[in-house]
Image (cartoon, rainbow, N blue to C red; front, side, top):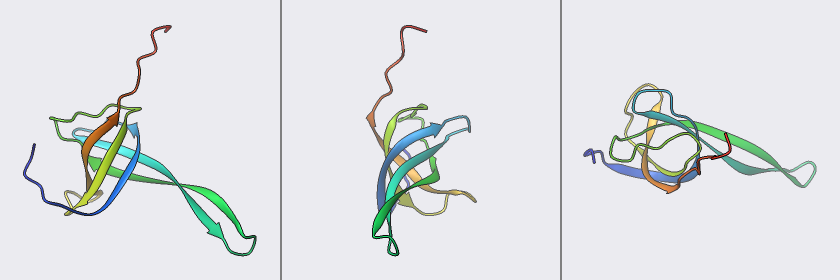
Length: 92
């Protein structure tokens, strides 16, 4: 694995796009309190994360990402492990 120091926040989310070179887009849902109505609303967060060749996460995988130094204009996270691989649909 590459020698990149990791620090800061850790998130678990789903890979929604893996079309870029060594980069994946990870999305996860969070709940936000709406004080006026005393209810929670679902919101989604999307970030670009570095996808090392040793991990090679694919679209649909559940991954754990952690914050790191800025790697590019949009990448501040790195994939540290694949929690759950997406199952291939055999009926297609």
